[in-house]
Length: 309
Image (cartoon, helix red, strand yellow):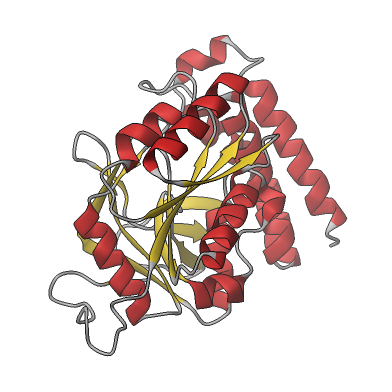
């Protein structure tokens, strides 16, 4: 992952068609108020995919899109994050976008940053590009992550990439040129929610693409802003289920026999790690915490077993 900071980045216009259009692709799931607050200041084509949560929210996002002139793809059911982004990206490309900016509803990015990301994606068409992502208090939420093949999961990026580790980028704010997006085939929809960006990063590197963090650019992400109970450490049952499931799904899809076994044996440690992200108080409600984590891990183990040894 190359950190293209202020003194080490492509010139914005050198050999770049600065007219290459950008579209912001965002998925709505009960978050129309966040969309209105976070997107209305952007001077860009906005493509919203509504993963239906309730009739009231779908009606509200439809009215918002009509009023703001956004393109809306309204789905009758929740298709999952990756599938919805793929639908939105296909619509944006059909409308002529050359660069896609994937953005979470609870992320805020300034127009100048959007423009820099657009130019960066045009300058390197085989790179996934993101800014540093900060929390509302200014602390770092994500500046690049690592997949640890020995530890069997995800770890923070601390500036170096040890042996048996690989970098990945979050899709909370991620720019990609249409050439690379089409080459990758978009997100793997099998994940439904969580780890699809890890999978995308892995496939990008395997295909010879690049992962880049622009440390001179920032976005702000109210992590969990689209989850019930946002504002504290609490996580949803869906969060626990799919994080525990999809870790093993990633292993089933991409790892060799020895690593698949290692990841399977590390599952109890990782399940505990995921559960602790929501704080110890949640253990008082095992039906909303421990149970979905265990069912997710079991579902992942089944997929791992079916992948063969």
